[in-house]
Length: 320
Image (tube, rainbow, N blue to C red; front, top):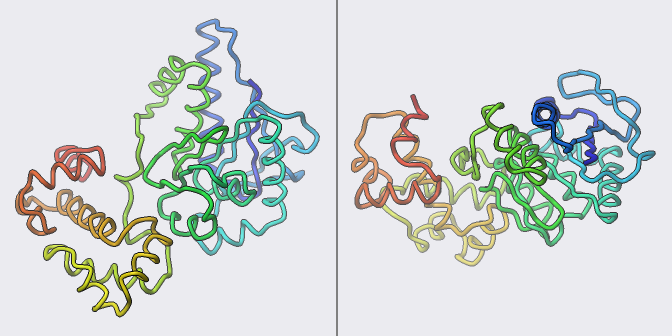
C-alpha cells in the first residue's frame, strides 16, 4: 500500500510524527510476523522546503510529480485557534494541497485528515455532502465555513465513502491505526498495544463547552444565562426574555454555530459542571445531581454514561 503524508509548512509536529510512528511500528511488526503486507510511506509536499510548527525541517518529495497513492493523509496545520487558522487556510500552498487532494480522490485514492487538517480537506470541497469530525473546540468555526459538511465533533473518527476524518491532536494516532486496520484488524490491535493507544470512539469526554471558539453574541448571552440556571432547569421563555431575542432566532443561531438545540446545549453545560464537581470535590453523586438540576443520582449517572461513555468512578479517577 502506497501512502503519501502531505506535509505543509507549519505542520503540527505531533500530528506528523504520530502518523509516521504508527505506520512505522506496523511495518516493524509485519517483519516479525514475516507477512507480505507492507506500507510504503512517502513524505510529500507542494514546496521544496517544509518546516514544522516547531521549526524542524521536513524532507519532502514534490507531490506534483508523483503517481496517485493508495492513501493520502493530511496532518494538522500548526495553527490551532480560529484567527491564525483562517490565515493559514488562505495560503497559496494550502490551496494547492487542496487541489491535489481533490485530484487524487477523484482518481480513487482514499483520503484521511486529522485535527485542523480536516479544514484543508473541507476547503477543497471534497467533504461536501459527507459526514466528518474535527477538533472539538473549532466545531463552530467549521460549521460556519463549511455548511455543506455534516459535522459530528463528538466522534474521534468518522469514515465517509473514501474519506476518513479524525478529531483533535492525538487523534492522528487513531487515523494512522485506521489505515492499518483497513488492511489487518489484528495488526492494528497489536500496534495499538505496542503504542499504548487505548480504544476511544468519542471526543465528548474532553469537550469543554465554554472553550468552543465562537463570537456570536446571542450564543454568548444564552450561555451566560444558562450557567446561572443549571440547578433551576431549562425554560425557553425565560431564556429569550432575558437575552432579548426570539425563540426562532435563538434556535437558528444555536444550530448554525454549535449544531445543537438550546436545550441540548443546556444539558451539555450540566454535564460539564457535574464532571467538574466529580473531579474537584468530595460531594456525593446525589448532591451533585441536585446542584446541576437533576432529581436524583441515578438520572445523572445514566446521562454521564450516555453522553461520555464513562461512569462516575472513571470520571473521578481522571480527576486524581
